[in-house]
Image (cartoon, helix red, strand yellow):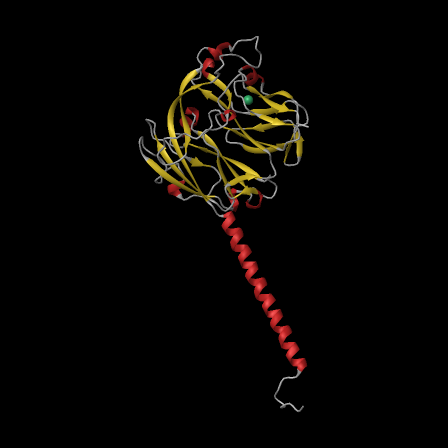
Length: 347
Ligand SMILES: [Cu+2]
């Protein structure tokens, strides 16, 4: 059959089909690539809301009224008075501020644990239920002057009965650096008269996890860790420098009265260590029974100073009821110690 000379040959037809297929594949790949990016962005960028009130409470530094580290000894001069009026950050489930959120026993006097992944934004609705102006100042996160929670700006000083919503951005610079673990810890605290208000107890921590390491969008804990514990080493000054009022605490408890640091052999455990206070708050945090890795260095003692924030990892190897204490002699004598429990793994 004679075809017109302009009519495409069979070879040319085949070429066109191949080109169309290639084009179609490229379009599909392009759409898939963009869809993946959109999905990952939507997973990583969450706005996390918290409702926190500052409140006056009665705090007991040793609820058992006993020296649980050396049961045959007393609480010595530090046991003369155990309960004092403190100020604390209390977490609530919503803006009615009617249902306080439970928190683990080991958190002691610490305020609610704030959590975020890199890329998130924290919206912290804060209500001052106390009788003095206070604030919330975060370390490490990105904020403008109004959201600094210190040193002027709208959030720098919240009057009694007033509220303020802090917006803090968890950018790359707020997340783990190249040599950090998959999560890092930051302090938050009141900063109108910072030294007074931290001594009153207005202290908490923020844990920021790498975006690709979170368990899920709704649970931004690191998935390469089984248990995360936080420990604040701080001497609270209750009686104008009188020794009996110098409470050498871990999370606000003395002489073994902090409980709940419980884990199991083989679990991946991360400890976030923080401190606040003055020149006497130079602490050497020591675990019995286990070592930790700090920036690739093996040790069982970590040095912390006021406003230090250090995270270390361990995988417990020995079951036991182990001491966890400051290794400075005066601090040990004053009760800066508790225990952590490692259970046998179930078979
Ligand atoms: Cu110490």
